[in-house]
Length: 541
Image (cartoon, rainbow, N blue to C red; front, side, top):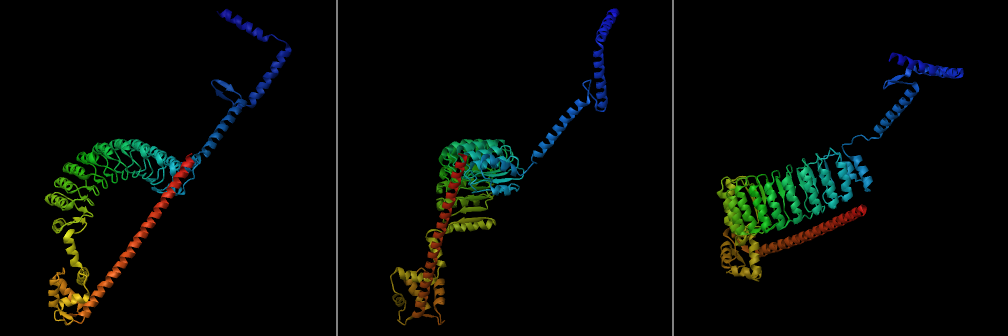
């Protein structure tokens, strides 16, 4: 083996040594040049993967490295700084969507609240706001009511809210969200963990949308206040929403006022309060609960221990319904405010509610509202008794009704007004009435003659009012009333009536003018909203 290797080495050496002198000289020259180059670049030598590179190779690599560093520096310079307000992001989004940036948003995007109600934002404008809010860490309350956002705009806002962890209050009312918007809201509430107050009133939600909202109410764990007023939930919608409300464990305030909840739907909503032990404020005014809903609410109040404010105004609840509701009030210990105004409760219904409050020593009701409902003197006495035993107890009602109210009003009237009204009703002249009292035709009457004459004529006056009349008419203080003083008193009443009538007419004109102005403003707002919506649609197109 050693001999063979030696032979191979010798052969290789011989082969390498073969060639002409010219070849050897050329090889030497190349070697010399190579050495010179190596010598000149020796300081730049570096090892890579076990091989030695020349200075030229090093120079090329260094140039590439410098280019990469420069490129990175340029990239860092081009990358905008982080903007917690989202202002630049908003500008860029508006540019891409082809909408004009709203100066209001640009101004408020660094504050805690952005209120852009009635601003004509439109669907694309809402999309730009949603993009900006994706990076905004300042805003806590976003109010976009009455902006013509429609389904697409509301969907963009709700999509943004799925990941937003700063906004706690959101107002999307009066934006025609409809079914698409209610679906987006359901998904938003399922994924969002920060939102605590949501207003979606006046968005044309119907019974189909009730399914989406029922899902949202069931799944949300953080929402505290929800406003779904001024929508179109009907009986079927109530039947869907009711069980979801009963299952909810986070809501503390819920408004369903101004819907069409009635019959079985109203009963389902009321029954939910039997199982829900979180809601503190429930607004159901302007629906159709009627006696069936009132009865169901009465049953629910027997077991409910959380509800503090209940509004059932304008719900067509009659005396029978009030009596059934009173059965729950008689045992409930959490309710503080009860509003039953503008219901046909009648005397029996009001009495049942008051007696239920009186009989329950653990009841803590402090405010009771019977707006536009008149009461009797007996009920007034009962109210005064409750006020005596409960210092904080307040009641609002429509005043005394029926004959008692007329008598009470007559007692407060000017005595001469009562005399003048009697004379007018009897179609008498002043002189004729005075002569009927002045038996001796002296054109002057004493206090006794006046009292006898008024009693005989059955003028509705008490002795105290007669004494007041004498004091008022006896200008010279002689204890008698002559015809001239009587005429002067009647003239004062006539003048006061004319001034009162003039004042009433002016008040009527003022109210009519106010209504006309409000109508004009409303019409103008509607036109502006329609113009903004049309502009938004053209922009979208």
